[in-house]
Image (cartoon, rainbow, N blue to C red; front, side, top):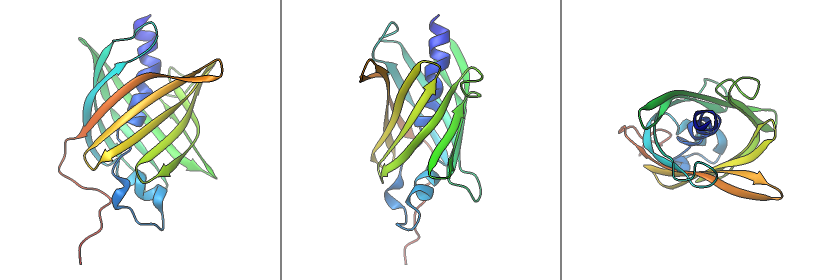
Amino acid sequence: MKSVILSCVLPLVALAAPLGLAGKASAAEPDKQFFRTVEGKWVGPGEIVAGKYKGTKFTCSFDGSTPDNKTGMSLDGDCRVGVFTQKMSATVERKGRDYKGNFMGGAAGSGLDIIGGNVVDPRKVVFTINRNQLRGVMQARIPDDNSMTVTIAVRVDQQLVPVIGMSLKRVDAVEVGSIAKN
């Protein structure tokens, strides 16, 4: 049962993990610039902070990229809980006025759907997530250029309850989305 819940929830982490470093973005295309910052390698620990598996710790590693001529991102990597490792993949793209995407094949498969969201400001993104009766949000905050905190919350009755917290560090030396000095 633990692996079923982790296989549904950890893909959220995969999406959330590398959404950082928008502080150097151009004002002309803030969303596109924001997503370009996912390019690179990210690693870090996380923990399930509520529910039946409260206290379960995991570690993830991701490679982020952005599609050519589109606003969005793709992630590939894995997350490890104890001796078990699960491959993770996630994709999100702007479709019209909103964002759509999926984790691990979406709700039709073994994952989740991204059904909406937006870049709130240069240091924060929020996505609406969905799988059957599970409704919630994923929020990523970037306190500085090389770290990020991710919170995933699900709706219980009329309240959002945080269930996963994660801290990631950039492990490559590339500063993507930066503007060359004159």
